Amino acid sequence: MKSMEEGRTVNESEYTQDGTVDLKGKPVPRSNRGGWKACSFLLVYEVFERMSYYGISSNLVLYLRKKLHQGIVTSSNNVSNWVGTIWITPILGAYIADAHLGRYWTFVVASIIYLLVKANPVITRRNYTNISGMCLLTLSVSFPSLKPPECHEMDVTKCKKASTMQLLVFYGALYILAIGTGGTKPNISTIGADQFDDFDPKEKAHKLSFFNGHTLLYRHKVVLGSPYTRMAKVIVAALRKWKVTVPIDSRELYELDFEEYTNKGKFRINSTPTMRFLNKACVETGSSTSEWMLCSVTQVEETKQILRLIPIWIMQRFTRNPRGITLLQRLGIGIIMHFVIMMVASVTERYRLRVAKEHGVVENGGQVPLSIFILLPQFILTGIGEAFFEVATIEFFYDQAPESMKSLRTSYSLTTAGIGSFISTFLLSIISKVTEQYGHKGWILNNLNASHLDYCYAFLAALNFLNFMLFMIVTKYFEYRAEISDSIDLLGEELKEKKTNV
Image 1 (tube, rainbow, N blue to C red):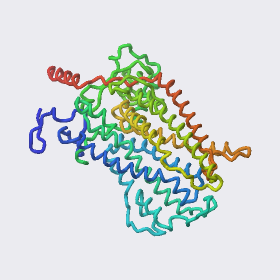
Image 2: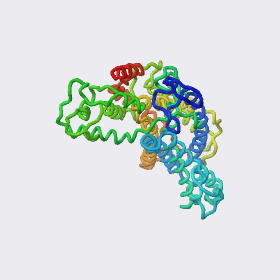
Image 3: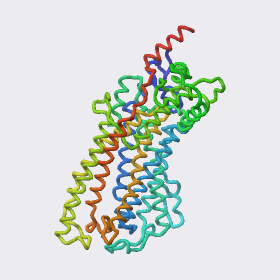
Image 4: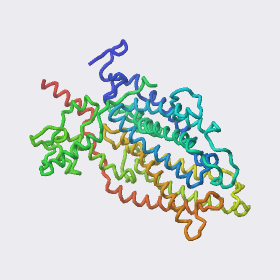
């Protein structure tokens, strides 16, 4: 089979075989679409976007304390809530991408929300709503009218608080950024992975390293509908046929023709013996062919994959993998690294408090005569830990997700960070209240020199160790998703057989 592409003849084998298309919905030749050429634009975008995000998040507590005059517990909790929202919103962005707009257009719209100037960039007291995203945040921290007056009190809680309007503008900008991040974060990695064809051995090998490592060049996955609706149909169909007996031979179960999957760029999955109750959804009874009464084997297996992944939001297990060191081994190393990081932070903070006491700056909260580089070891360890844990988490969820839910499943790996941020808010409040009881000064005070953050870090280290123990227990029972039953060779053989019969 041959076709014409930009004035030249293109063999069918030169097109991608995984169902990706260009912006116009046409099949794309792998020679001038996708690959590392397209991914380079995504990588540059991610570099600058992460610079913006970490530039904000790393200084946000300090800004809330020094400029908006909030206490340390209040400011820390506000930052944790914002970070939690940033990591939770990818669920919405992934759903919109998988079910409605597609990954690319969701990414574009979210990027506009992230940065968009809606109207005139000149701001006045009565014109706060004209700016959104990063621009509004920049203006809110630049104009004196959008901040309370300067205050040089040692205890910032005694200074004049920010007005309701000032807080509305500032937090409005932050949470607009969170909405924008929700659309970009779950899709940038999946768009990148879409640039490599699983049916091409060379490109598939490149995809394995993509997670470690312009518009018209991108390949696009066809929107397949809401994954939540597909899951609901399986569960409802199984419940409605709860009295039906599942055949021993899986070939008697209902399944679509392989050509339908090929046209959609999907893979067919064999039936598995786990969660056999759901197999009732694909038993043909002859009473109805409604999608809420009869589902294909592949649709049932995709639902099983999602249900099996739920415990992995929190914990993973070790397994063999062709990547050398497996994804779950990297996750385990990442968890242990977080335990070590908290222990190093506790020891470093204890040393800092001792120096503060020796120089008599405990009560007045003065500057401790130490170099910022004493924090370098824990930040180096944090970078190493993130390289193991965060990257492996995203790749793991992408690898284990059904074809129709790639963005959504990637968003769940980000959601764990969001849940952690909200739990951080809860823990910080509890630690602050509990440690201040019975006349004690407490571990977390506005004066950090009089606080005991070393105890707090040690407590977090204990929680990380407990998390690792639970990780080992739960992941023991995790099963990987069923292998894709239709390889490119099998598809070719079946297609030839059908053509011969015709």
